[in-house]
Image 1 (cartoon, one colour):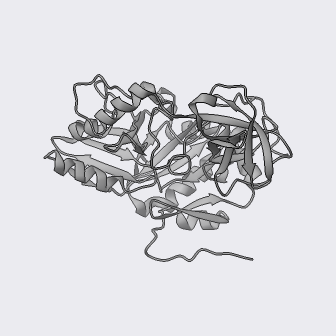
Image 2 (tube, rainbow, N blue to C red):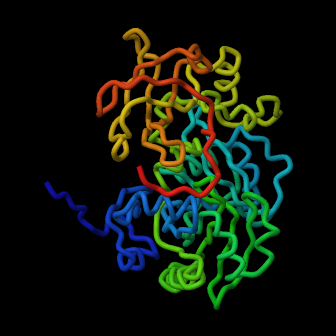
Image 3 (spheres, rainbow, N blue to C red):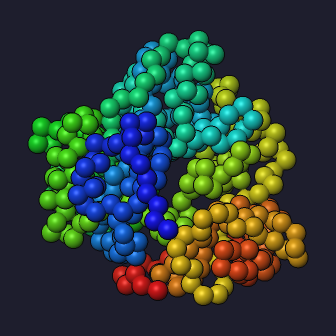
Length: 379
């Protein structure tokens, strides 16, 4: 039975909304209270474009929380357990953010814009409310707002050349998560070497939504010679790459140690960051679950899973698969999820209760060992 989404003012449209409509978007999701284009009708073609060529994505749903004022860096340091002693302007960081229980509540990229201004490029929740509450609680002198900033991603092995064609050779100087302010054809932007894929890519942070169509057209024109086409953060590629999706892969009890973020958690800081005591307790006991990949047998899965798949051993629950799909490059069914620490590095055969029937599975560390050679994205 056909199902449609109703557009209305309660859910916001991105500055690239009309452009994605013209490009043939077929499916939306809702993310950060915005319409999020997630498919253009041919998932395998979009996957192939990402892993072998170049794609452009409307990721304006990656909203920014702008923290500005004399205590801006102080607040950012209180929000994350990651040590930011060596933070520098123009070099971003991935920063897990936890609540007072040690539960991961967001995993943004931190962009240091200036000595008194920092942006958090957030996952799907109201982190701005959390930041305001902590700032008030700690009596910090900051202003916290959502700026008019909308990222457009250019991803894939040919992304660098598209960006060089647009902006020049300085693109090659950017380190991972590094970014730079620039003006392109009168449009003010920040260009960052980042993006939700492991294929290489960049995000262009548009700072004035009135120029959305112009920026989309400029990227499409520059990328035409390289075969650029529209897409979205790709479900299959993100599983192959072991990329975490907050909310999809996490629950109300997930802590950063379960997600193997140990190197990003500095419990020895003198700083009293949020969740410090809880994280110390969790670390002393050790995580009950761990983030792992699953390799499953049987016929190729058709489409993504629409619910979490329980994982059992001898009928006893030991974990779940939160994202599962057939990998064209590995030619296997694979998945991501949390599993009991006891089985996290075990060769034991597990049973996954999928929408396609029971499948035998083995656990593996992430990311998956995906071939780099060009392949045809067909099953």
